[in-house]
Length: 179
Image 1: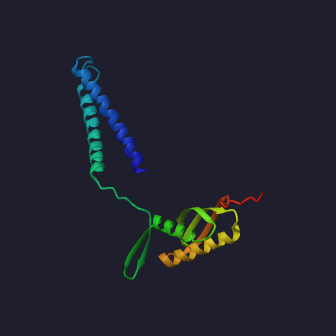
Image 2: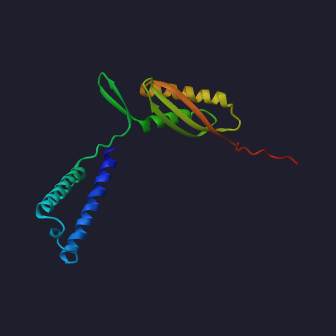
Image 3: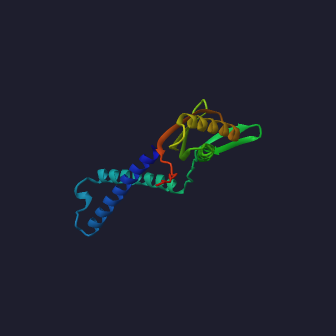
């Protein structure tokens, strides 16, 4: 939300500076009559002070944004142990899921996604299976392998492992013809 507001403010700021610059160029070229011809002195002074104050505040905001350090938050799972804190990135956990699922015969083109819930990790494995494999047996093996491997390796509870079979691949075995 803050970034959208900053972009809107930057747009308004840029547009304002552009309009003021064009007006100043036209005024200095005597193509536009002085503003005093349109407004009385007090109104002109209040208008100029207000516009200058707003542009100054926007300048301070943009200066602050340009020098502050961005806090890059890498999504991770945080654990506290008796020895200190442990952070495991989401990418690491997804790679561990893929490693465990790849041990199951018949699964290929694996992809993993995960979500953190109060009950533990919810893992979604997408796979393509080879044509000669029992899908229910293979998916059960994937679920068990991923669940057990993750809990042993990371110590993070796994609440659910869902397996989505995207397609069935054709066997690459070529049958020989006898004529």
